[in-house]
Amino acid sequence: MTAKEKLSELFQVIISAFASGWLVAVGILINFTAGAGVELSFSSFVNLPFFIAMVVGFSIIFLLLYSYFDSEIVKGFSFLCALCFFCFSLAAKVGKTEVYIVLFIVIMISLYCFDNKYKPTHLNKDVSDKIQWSLIVAFALLAFGCVLAISVLRYTTYSSPNYDFGIFCNMFYNMKKSGMAVTTCERDKLLSHFAVHISPVFYLILPVYWIFPSPITLAVVQPIVVFSAVIPFFLLAKHLKLSKNAVMFITIAFSVYAPLSTGCFYDLHENCFLVPFLMWMFYFFEKDNKLFMFVSAALVLSVKEDAFVYIVFFAIYTLVARKKYLTGSVLLVSAVAYFGICCLILTTFGTGIMESRYSNLADGGSLIDAAKTIIVNPGYAIGEVLVTKDNDIRKFLYIAEIFCPLVFLPFMSKDFKRYILILPIFINLLTKYPYQYDITFQYTFGISVFLSYFSLLNLADIEKEKQTKLSFASVIASMMLFIMIVLPKTAAYYDKQQFNSETYDEITQALEIIPENASVTATTYYLPHLASRDVIYEDEYHDTPSTQYFVLDTSRAVAAGRNEKYLAAGYQLIYSKEGIIEIYYNPDMP
Figure 1 (cartoon, helix red, strand yellow):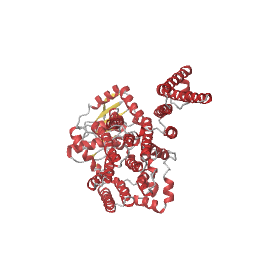
Figure 2 (cartoon, helix red, strand yellow):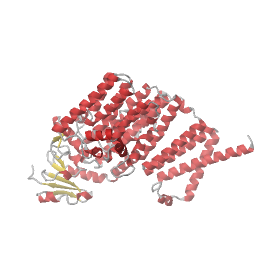
Figure 3 (cartoon, rainbow, N blue to C red):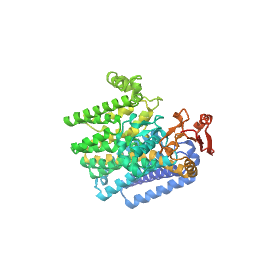
Figure 4 (cartoon, rainbow, N blue to C red):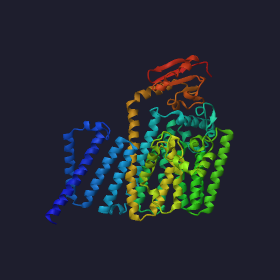
């Protein structure tokens, strides 16, 4: 090697070490310095001499690392790790999808350049079964633990509102008592929940609630249900004969796939059952086990009346793409027939089906009118795909949050018929109902499973070496979004519990004043803690005072004036904690 070549190599090593040291130093500052990492004020918090010392120090560490291992791949890999550390730190601190998209692009380009230059083979060396299982279980438990903490802490920090957690708390109390899924706080009267949504799947939770009759039980059940889908996903990945490392990486990516975790953020919903039921249905379909596939499909239908649409799309896929004519026909006819029966029940005995969410396609009409618009006026429908209620870019960001963690694997198929599996996403994109294109609500559970299944099918068609690299990239992208959204949420609720524990204890003690058999009207965030009783109403929708007790959350601005109608009706203040809670009582009420 000539002197010029040695000098050039030394220069590259120094640049690589400096860049890696700089990224690590900035990443540490982002984590431990006040101020967001993308705000101008962040610079004022940084001590420049200390920062320079950090960069130099870490650069020297990387240089020592390079000299010790004396390997080209170590240089590239160490820079990649430093870049990931910086991106993860920034994503966690900033928490904006726009930033995530930029970081996602940067990391994907870096992974591509790294692979193109160094062609690492260690990713394709099969890990042992022990390591595979250990890593999958570790990441699954990490995600599960975070979501479980959020679910429980939402309840214990009085952050769960009546709509919808209070409703389900009251419903399960009545289910345990009489077997009937009735509530008083859903429509401000005694009414079966099945008059609003037909969800017999809730009875699967009842035995657990019977043993542990507490709202916390309901908070715990949902993450267990969601993350149980890791099992059929892993089995499906193995059945499709992915490389051993690809099975491990893609299962880890599924475990930390943010839309599954964030779908649990707004308390218990029946939609959570879509995740395991759909995944088992896909697994048994691929295994050609018709009996258990149909059982799984029936369980999907039991989730909610509108879950039939997922079976319809899957049936069309089995008919068109897989040419399973009998299977597809049975699925299609059964799903449509079931939905028809549900519609008949809801319109005859219930409150009707929720058609208003697609009023932008029906001009105030029915779902049939919306379907007609899509068929005869597709130009208008296409125009609505990215249009939101507030005319912002929320739907574009929603698409990025769903597809980026999957490294766009659903689009890596040459089989055009397979793209039927992507169509359920339009359920969420064709509406202007904002919660349906927000991954922090339950409406993304179904499409997340479809896209995960689609990704597995496409991954199985790719050569083994690329399978591992793409699945590894998916882990990086999924983990970054998880760090950006889920971890900060977990920390925020934990801090809320720690900093306000005395206040929550005071509220709990105050609520214990109210007898278990008393009728109560309460403001929304206190209602779930009082829902285990025969009569419970939410104040916002209960116009006429009619219960023995009224509980007012005075920590929120909306409390102003809420007590006036109760005072006028003869209620007396029996407990008050300024800025926290007021309890009123009227002995003359039944």
